[in-house]
Length: 363
Ligand SMILES: *Cc1c(COP(=O)(O)O)cnc(C)c1O
Image (cartoon, rainbow, N blue to C red; front, side, top):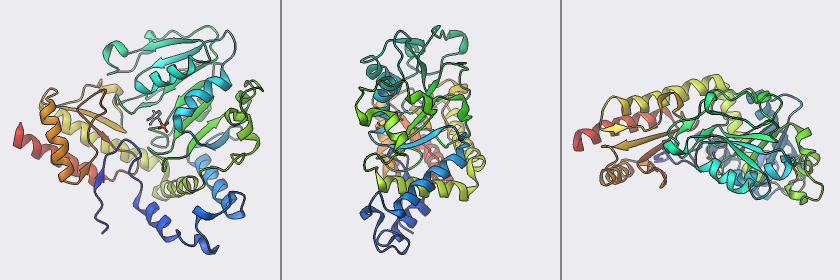
């Protein structure tokens, strides 16, 4: 109806059509208030409703315990790489990192500016094609916290169970799989996620945390960089990214209308199964990622053992067939199919069909 293509972009990524339609319908006059959400004061009654509805939706869907706070911040997940250590690092207590790819590398690069750290485990020597096992992991005696990336967007691995860190807070970068499956929030001290993969547009970053962790921050830390500030002002210390928060609220409503995480999780499993089966049924395609660690959000695929010319052809012919953004990240090469919550089943089926036809032509 809208001539939309199937979009496999890793982020910003596909959004549910009903969300886009709703935003379109409400664009000029939001619920009879005579103006657009884009134009309204962040202190207005309407926006306060938008913000509190988004928070309530996230709490319901994720089952966030009452004693956790939910913040809507800016600066992307990348700013969290700086804010987390600046707020949570305790003198003489290293930050433990489970190093699983490009995003934990960026986190390390930033946290080492302000904190001591220890690599508790790393699979770098195997080019991050699998996740570390618990027997390979050595935590510090007294870590400030443990940093983990729940889904490695670039290398295509995803944790299914999280390590038990006991009294030490577990901090998770869930940018690319938040709301894709149920998680036990009480296992984490802090969760952060840039919205533009699975929960909305670029511009807003969700932080879910135990508020007492915010009290670790030195008072001399810049006001905007303290979680304390945003907790106290309920994400309204300064102007929040109002339109992005509004869209996140619509995405949350969409998730609930679809049946919540049980339905979404089942669909994500089905979509991932279709693509991994399309890869595994033939030697023409390969997935370098160890089977138990394969991501249900970002499927990595090589063509003909990593034939770059053929992979280039795949990308260009897929684009012509309205299958957009299937090129792998430059650090990995090959192909990457991002299949977040809003990726329709029809998109995945069309891609699997295209893969079969491409193999027939060139295999
Ligand atoms: C995309 C991504 C980031 C970076 O997010 P920005 O919002 O661009 O800063 C960090 N971590 C993971 C896991 C990501 O997928």
